[in-house]
Image (cartoon, rainbow, N blue to C red; front, side, top):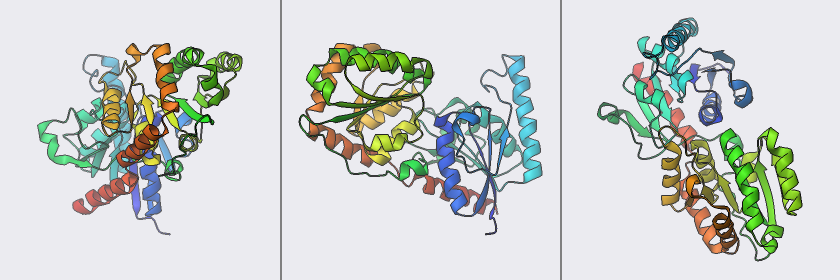
Length: 366
């Protein structure tokens, strides 16, 4: 099939930025476009399944610190000119950015070259790179109906698409909720980013110690742990007689979410999106050190829709959280209602809606 042309995607090299970019790439490839990805070295960990014919690693630094730190300014300039050269050589029809510092030089260069471009904001708070770029791009696409931090001049560029999720998550979209049976096995999934995994590795064993033995015996646990914590946490769970599957990374996490009665996790944008598309209740523990408190706002949006509960990390106590989990394990109707509300919060068509926006800005410029 003849390609419709090249679209370049720019994203920070973490899962939170790369996963929605991957979902858009999957949609655009189906429509006949060729895809290049511009990112940083972390793509080796999170971008293994990204459907790009070429990957360009671009130097980047914080745009907000570039004036204060000469080294940052030099790195940013290097990234700008490298992106400029890549665009002049490859002549993309459009450029879409997904936040993170590595997206800044490509989008800034694209706007200078008058290439149609957009940014997509995954969180309920506009990220720092996207905040700077919002005035220069054609469209600011959002994952949430309301986004904090958008300037008055950029308001007219907003379009709500939802947060695209990967095909591996769409394959589990709207999976029937497996209501827990009284005294039957209870499937609990616990995960977070690297920092979230560290917190849960330290905190959850103390929680389970506080639970009644009858509740512990019901648990079927899947938990993400940092590699260096796996052996220690496995030994603790073995001593508590908990059925546990532990890993540093689950390639099939959407399948585990779909089989869960309850999820305990951080509230990164991709986690919220996949919980909504699959339709699972969640106890959300926002990362407490986020600069813009974006995870708290994400969690509040999900909880306000009825899909789960926000549990600030600073207020969490093992005994109280153990009582909370034990109560939910016996309230299947509460969990089912939350699962239904989570599903209504999800946007399974987000990737297609964002692909429509890409084609629209290409057509408008033509």
